[in-house]
Image 1 (cartoon, one colour):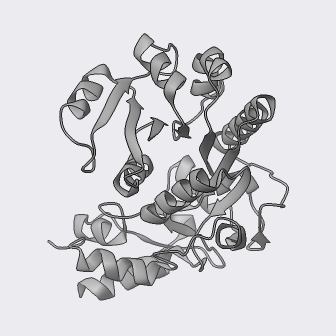
Image 2: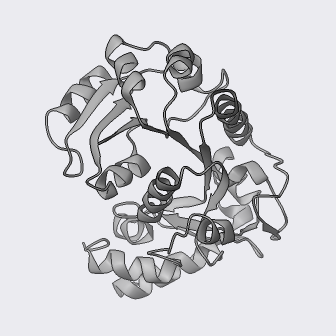
Image 3: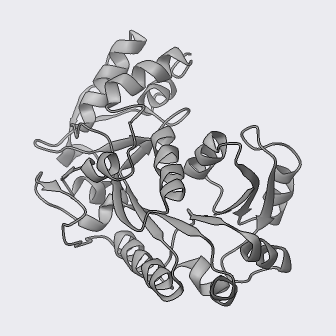
Length: 295
């Protein structure tokens, strides 16, 4: 019997719930709103019974303290902010008194910053360029320090751009929101949400301690994803838009300000994850077959 506690029941962590094996017999998760917690607790989440508790990042309820005390595995999907990691801030005494068997922290490949299209791996020195990536790096270090102090393995999973059912280029095309922005030389890595779930569960199963990039096999230009999705749907691709004329928000421009190719050799060689969706083409074909992009 294993109790999984999830801080932040969002898109990626719901995929973990969906893929959780029968050996995980109890699942507790948090959301920010009490009303949302009550709503989600009233019915199965991804086919599983999940106790959903409110946690706004500032105070820990008695119920949440009890969940921390009995958790075997803790998945941290809640983002940090300028004041630090909300779980470490609010739950530090309980975590110190009742260390779990393992922690998985979901971070981002954004901590590597820009490498002008060059390859990065887990040995590459982080040099975050945006405030949100710097906050992630500080949170990583906070969880690593917690693990070292209490003898808990902490897997830091650095995720590439997340997509999957309901959140992908097919859906964006169907909604009319897809844009083919062209910046010569720009590439991104991606990761399907079901492969994130694989990596999380493998980390818990192996008690992995350390950093792992969770990313696909083929960094590629963003416009190629839109073009291929349009081919699958049998619709014209949106017109090309030069990056300089894109009118992106400051956050959007910041994504295009970083270009790197992210290695996943450690994901395969140490966690032994065999990607369900090693590239965007195979993933989009599967998503289209599942109904995404239909009008």
